[in-house]
Length: 252
Image (cartoon, rainbow, N blue to C red; front, side, top):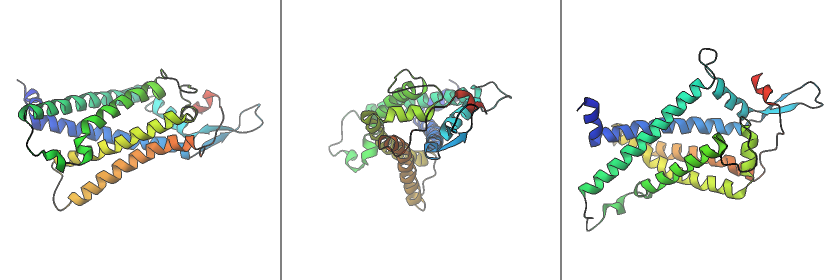
């Protein structure tokens, strides 16, 4: 058995992998919410020959275009984006695998429940970690099919037109509220995950645990609230219709 195989087979190894992959996913969410918040920064007004008025090119669409071409001409278009997607996919798969295996191992080690369950002392987020994780996983699949692949079409969908795709979908109250509810579940899942990450990596300490817990709360609630604010802003009409624009303007 190789050194990695032995490491993976151990509970410590699995917990470490869960922590590292969780850290990768947490970093992605932090970057993702920063990108999504560009819906609030407006648009650039571009004059086009033959047009009477300036045409709006939303900042979030420009950001989406940047992600597709970043690295050019050193690497081909989409190379960096797909590289990041592969890393994220592997992180999600590994994270799910080790968490499920750890849960099964824990159940096998204690086939008979204690007379007085220790779960009563656990936080709500910790007790329902598997449930919230499954909900978040189902949401990720739906979200990718909805806004990335365009397989699930709600309202209008045009690749690259991020702002209008969001606006069109989130004008539907069921979709908008559904996204907000899942973001609440994500906050619970993320809070316990971030706190567990500190413990697994040996960063927890009685002298700084209060700060680490506060960070876990603020980070998880902040990220989830930032993501949830977008569907609510479109649903309530807080964000305007910026109109259509020719795709070639993104190349400028």
